[in-house]
Amino acid sequence: MASLDLRDVTARIDYDEFGEPVLVVTDGEVTIEFTGGLRGTSMTAALGARQLSTAANDYAETVRALLRGRPNALGESAPLSGSHATGR
Image 1 (cartoon, rainbow, N blue to C red):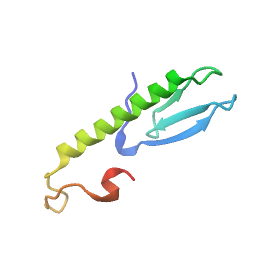
Image 2: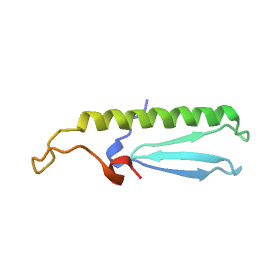
Image 3: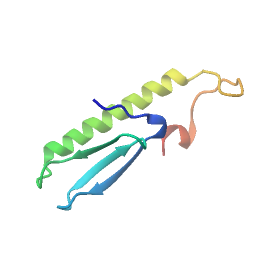
């Protein structure tokens, strides 16, 4: 089991020695590579990536919901909004 600190996480697409795409996610200490299989990226890999994406998005929405209304460092309470809050 691996644990990533999402406060420091970065994600990028890289390619293996066969030219297959690899999703690399790291927090600077732990790195996880998501692959589509040995020389055979398939629709199943695409579906798995979609499930991962959906779960990550659901997690982000859950965290945002928990943070709404909590005071920030200045003691002000405001809902999260704008491009920074959405990760775009």
